Image 1: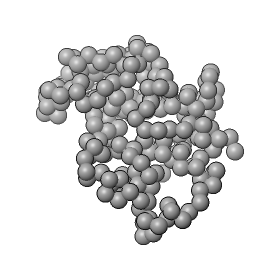
Image 2: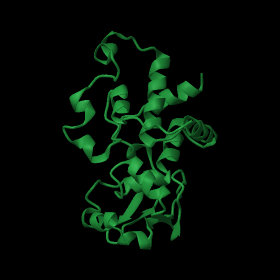
Image 3: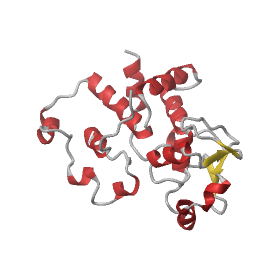
Length: 213
């Protein structure tokens, strides 16, 4: 399966809400939800009003929404779900914890990128380190005590030089990350909690029901 390469704004329109896939553009009047708040396609303007959604449909849409937020494949998502089932506590919360601990998500949360897609690019291009060692795997799962930073040679690049002036102001990091603005690093001080994931409304119980059919 290839990565989705079409306009990501169509994904937000399909889910009927902002998924913040385009970074700063999502906060401007150019956002597709602000301009065309209906599903994409020829019959998009009338589809939502006349279509009755079943329980399965709601479960599917919730699963697809979370997949698109974190930018993972279906096979990856199923693997995360299987891990969440084996974990202690509520399966839905464990699933979101696993997704939040992805390295590309951490880079986004600490403010080094304006979107998870951009954060994934920074990771795969080798600009990010974990405990001083380069890690170029976007799905790498961080643990409490890990220190995430920018590779020393990458700090000299224009992107990071410009970012240094506004780093720490782009977004408020969650409490499970201790961000050092001066050094552009973040320490994972704890596992993410459910209340830390509030930027997009997620009903993880629907996802559990989808895979429990």
